[in-house]
Length: 248
Image 1 (cartoon, rainbow, N blue to C red):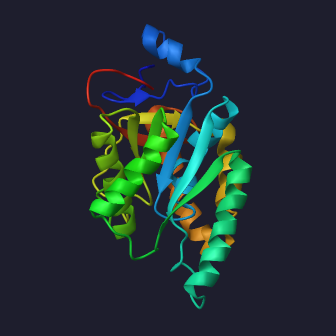
Image 2 (cartoon, rainbow, N blue to C red):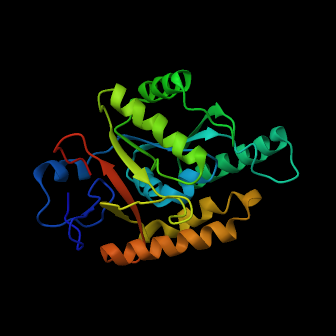
């Protein structure tokens, strides 16, 4: 893994970074050239994977990875004046359209927007799904979040990671930090300068959400994270490390 310019942080080496520090470890160098890996980005609603992690998804897809945008709900409560059934159909299609832009697969896990559940049955459902995909890397919501669906999504994935004996690398992503994501101090960055237009095109597929305000918030986050790691724009993550192994 290359060392970032910011003390105490790291720059994603993965196959993501076009450049890596000369201090990168042999293991990180091997993984930077890995192709054919699998990445799940598990978000609470349609538009969460794209806004929080769309640049990273685009870069991985370009490197030959199998990238899956996983939606805990179909955004049923997300369009004022529409029934749950109507909103579900609209937002599901918007998610599918965004995945086409990012060149990734999509999956819906069947919970209900605004009424997500964190209990034994849903822990088991998430664990079973993740095990069936057998990913190398999973990105999900940081569980300290003012949006209950985000927090529940993160906790479901965290439980799966523990019960699956840390079989994949777990990274937390941020959503509208300061308003939704709270107390988030990233240690890992991805330079998304080369794919920023692809990310924004995918985000704009979510027409029903009036993406201008959401995108404006995330644009500032992308610029700020870029300043932190000395590139134009970046996405930032927090790596939940179980041991001293470095994957990205």
